[in-house]
Image (tube, rainbow, N blue to C red; front, side, top):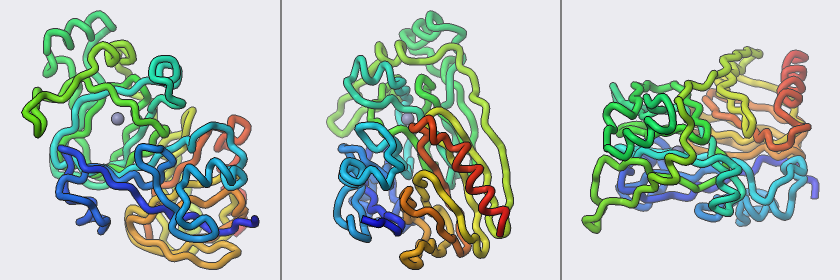
Length: 339
Ligand code: ZN
């Protein structure tokens, strides 16, 4: 099969006690209730699979495409599609949590991947806050403060604004505060250890379960703010900001204003439209996209054009070491320079 078109995906929605209605208000998603917290937009995970909306594989799940058409993904290795793209709406505070790394996830949970994630803040209320890291000097102090409920002294609060980006490696204590909408790029994992839940009770009148023992085992001490790349490129009608390049993924923000021809790939790209609209054109023809759409440009599409007026969050997997994004970015830059 010569597959020469973008793969558009249908999100999967999750009701959460902290969720709201912004996924409908901002993206016009058909959310199941007024407490919808998450859209799993590009997902091969069995807990929330996204379905293919167009083309020869229409109706299949992304996981099925991954399992049976690996050429679309540059023959990347791995049992599961490696990345998961979500949009979250926190009407209320999320619980304070931490995720394990790959080794812990495999050995303790029997899962393929740990969870390193990153957040692009799409919008938020003024003075919104996240919890990002902690103030303990070492594991002993972390355990002492956690066991004694010294949460105000332990947790590190950071104010956020639209357009901010946070890289949250596994082992980082974190929580999204109320009033924030983020696009999350993460390893495809659903393992969360709840550290603290503000002593809230659920609908059943009980406090939600905590996982303090596992949390203390996987949390990095002391907390260190990760370094972010801030590489910016400008080509004709495309502004690129590289948000992060790390072990599992690279993430970019592309601001498109006009026509950008002959983008070339040697792997596959995940694209989420967070603002505006436009078209992605391959040999197969043009495909319209609008705010809230998510699509994959498969590795079998060797060149494509973008046109329109839009902000896109773009990512690729770095799972195939020999196809680390350097090569493909360089390739892409080369093609852009020849315009
Ligand atoms: Zn998380």
